[in-house]
Structure formats: C-alpha cells, structure tokens
Length: 197
Image (cartoon, rainbow, N blue to C red; front, side, top):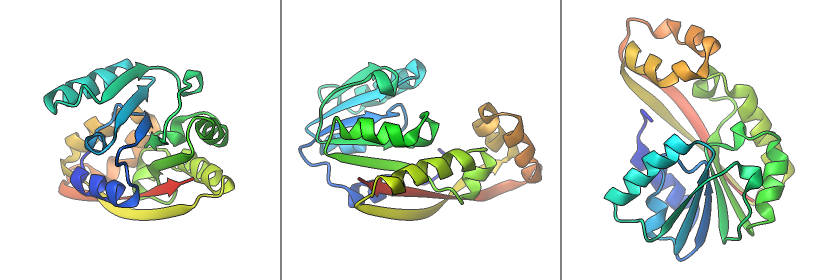
C-alpha cells in the first residue's frame, strides 16, 4: 500500500488486543502480520497462492515461522477454531459478506474486520464502493460491538505509480484515475473501518 502502514498497524493494535490469542486471519496475504508478535498462534488463509508466498517471505525475514501456519483455501472451505477471526481488507471481496460473517462466528467468538469505508474516495477510484457498502451493511446487520472509522491517504510519487497499483482493478478504475495524469507527489483520501462483532 502507498499509505502509512505503521499507522494502520498501530490503529489495529489499539482497537483489538491480540495478546496470547489464536488468530484466524482471512485475506492474510497482505502486509499486516505484526499482530503475530503478540498472538499465541496465527492461521493465515488466502485464496491467492502468490500473496501467501509473499507473506511467507515476510514472516521468514521476521522469524515468525513458528507462530504462523499458511493455508491456501477459499474462505467457505476453511473451518478451524480460534479466539478471533480477522478479515484483512477482504470481506468486500467475499460473496455474501453476511453469510461470511456467520461462517466466521461458527469458528470464533470474536470477528474483527478491517475494510474499506463505503464513502471513501479510494474505494470509489478502485471501483469497490458498492462492494464496500455491501460489506458494511452486512456488518451492521450482525450487530457489531464496536466500529471505528479511520481517515488516511494513499500517497503516490507520480501517475505511473498509481496506475501500476490499481490497473488490476479494471477499465472503470483506469478511467477514474485519468484526472491524476501528469501529477506528482499527490495523495488520495482513503477511509477504512475497523469493526468487532
């Protein structure tokens, strides 16, 4: 991400205590694994093998291999028990987010969600505002104990950096970033939320 990862990690650790807990981390191929230092154990699940391979390289560098188990699986095929199940910026990508939350609650008493906020400019640019809205509607239906909205920014040195980050999102995204052509050292507002069910 082209945002302040350490600040996002600090926000996550302030929102939820991972101390000595077994964490089931869904969409775990991302860059958030610092909670593993505090956790007793982490089972990291992702449907994308390449992102799990990247995570494996990261945890080997950080000497965390004894705490993390990596599983290549679709979320709905996954079934383990833990103290907390965390959706790591992926609930909006899972078909039927409400069903996904109920599946998560069958494995863990706590469900922690980090995901794009529906009205975020970044969610709009990446053509994920509808998915994010569906995700947060599902979260609200499941009566969360706590929700926190956080505003940050994505920072880019130039248009090419932005283009390379978002081009996999498709044609609509490429059209939406046209206004940044020729710009240098710019930022795009990104809001996201943390929820505990």
